[in-house]
Amino acid sequence: MSSSGKPLTSIEICAGAGGQALGLHNAGFRHLALLEIDKYACETLRANVLSHPDWAGCEVIEADVNDVDLFQHEQLAKFGLKPGDLDLLAGGVPCPPFSVAGKQLGAEDERDLFPRMLELVEQLRPKAVMIENVAGIRDTKFAPYREEIVAELEGHGYAFCGWELVEARSHGVPQLRPRTILVMIRKEYLRDATFEWPVGGHGLVTVADALEETMQERCAPHGAKGQAVFDRWLEKASGEKKEAPTLVGGSKKHGGADLGPSRAKKAWAALGVDGMGLANDPENCDPDRDLFRPNGPMLTVEQAAIIQGFPRHWKFSGRKTARYRQVGNAFPPPVAEAVGRAIAAVLQGIDRNDFGGDLGKMRLLPTPRSAEAGPNGAAGFDGLEAIGA
Image (cartoon, rainbow, N blue to C red; front, side, top):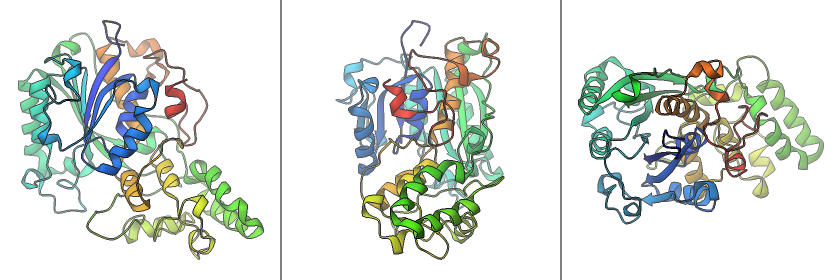
């Protein structure tokens, strides 16, 4: 809750399939709106958010963020927002301008939405800003651009909390997925408080830990042959440091879904998974294609989502390739939750020492949460089941 006793409010741009939104929700933020341009991602957001009472009032806006007036848009006008009302403006702006997999054109890339984010900050004057991007934005070549962004936000009254490289595996996500996160908070909230980046500490979650349940479910209907596939996979996927390589969403212009470039496919093969494509959903399983492959079974979209840290009950809309692209481009919810809790602690004036320095113990809202590990291995991360409990 905010100092006024009301839930912390947020608006998120480039919301994708809701990874950041789900994490921030679990951190105590209540979204007024999620903006996203992709129609399938918007269907996913609507399916998971609009029917759930604890997300009541959240608007899913399917539009180009460049064309949306956050004060006058028909879905937002009802909030009567004024500059300074909003607690958090967040977004995972497009990564291709900074990704090592692309041309790294930065500010010269037409897909760069940092300028639009800065415009929105100037208009809304939220108490805090959180922007997520790929690790590549920390490259030396982008240092002047990063400095320009920080300087502009400082000019609007924000204090720089860092461009931090956060590794998802430190937060219970079974994947090598470093992401860069910029946090800036209005200076008045940092006069008597310090923003502290979360350090994680869940312990490494392996691919076997994360996928054992779903892989057993897929193999069990196929008798002894299925059990043999499961046993071979489990042996390869178990052991120390058996996390997944980075999932990628791929391009809409090129081909269908697979688990990444050759290096990633090789890493998946070492984990007993064939990365040449995605398996059909279990109800449409073609055993010879989906399970009985020389390199091991392919993953389903649901299993890829678990590797990203999504709970099993977060459903994705669209055909298989569209669903996988949403998953591959997502921000892991447990990482968003950890950073969101650190921001909330500052905005609420909470002393970390009251919780032994562990923000994961905080109860920012009266929302019951399980203390047991969920399907992604992260303790207390129950997604929609916990949200409405």
